[in-house]
Figure (cartoon, rainbow, N blue to C red):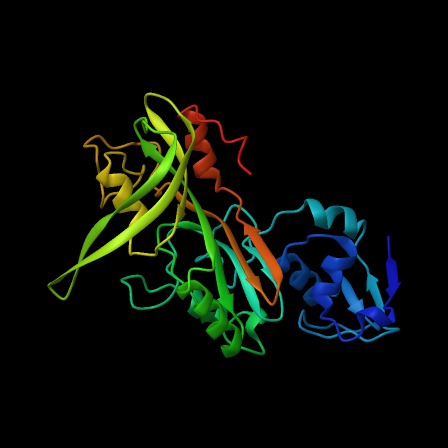
Amino acid sequence: MIKSYIVDTTCNNMRIDRWIRNTIGKIPQGLIEKSLRSGKIKINQKKVKSSHKIKSNDKIVFYDFKFEERILQKKINFSPSNQIIKANEDLIIDNNENFVVLNKSAGISVQGGTKSKKNLIDIFKKSEIFSESKPFSVHRLDKDTSGVFLMAKNRETAQLLTSLFRLRKVHKTYLAICHGEIEKNSGEWANNLVRYDNGKKIVENAKTIYKVIDKNSNSSLVEMKPITGRKHQLRKQLFNIGHSIYGDNKYKSFTKTLRVNKELMLHAYEIRFIIKDKKYTYKALLPEYFKKLLKIKRLNYSNLN
């Protein structure tokens, strides 16, 4: 089945990938790009890139059979290198003119400087998403932590987002599965964390607001909203209260190891911020291994916002 559209004046100069999402629905960026490359979507009978800007009266044709129905159901692993990114969920959460929002897989570094030779910044430098720009890292996310992550597309946006993070105007929510039953269902952790830089001892104040989503005598699912952004803050704070995160081999409260998983059960679930009075909220779907352990530990997460 072939279906065609004529671009109206209100969409003049809009990117084709944005137009597709606005017209058809929330579609993975990777699937849009694949369809454009293969010619399943054409503009005025020509192949174009996802960054192509459409004009009024352009004719956009979908050549794939039942494309609109199938595209909304299909999950893809968008990946500049399939050996590197192996996310079970859609990696691209949003892709606009100023920044990209990802659901980062565990095991991938954000940028160089770590022992890992593979990092997101270098990967996406070679992707079509940044064919007219380059990726800028604006915040940190540990290599073994999965979840929502931002990359700016230009220096101006990078500086703006970096400032928002520094001023604590970006609000992040993490989820963790940890050992044991956390006694209090909600509260605040405020303490000093110690780290060493080139042998120098550094003491930093750390603050986190937490809420227990579900728990039993064996394990707890906890939601955490860090106020400060110290290195390994959440992992250290849970370790300090005797409830280390499953899969954390550095900060371990328990000597017994869990054989059913190797991944760190820490996930950046949500990020919120405001730019020019516009509110942005993004959520990253839970990885399959995370949901599997929740089921094994009989923890309910159906009441997550």
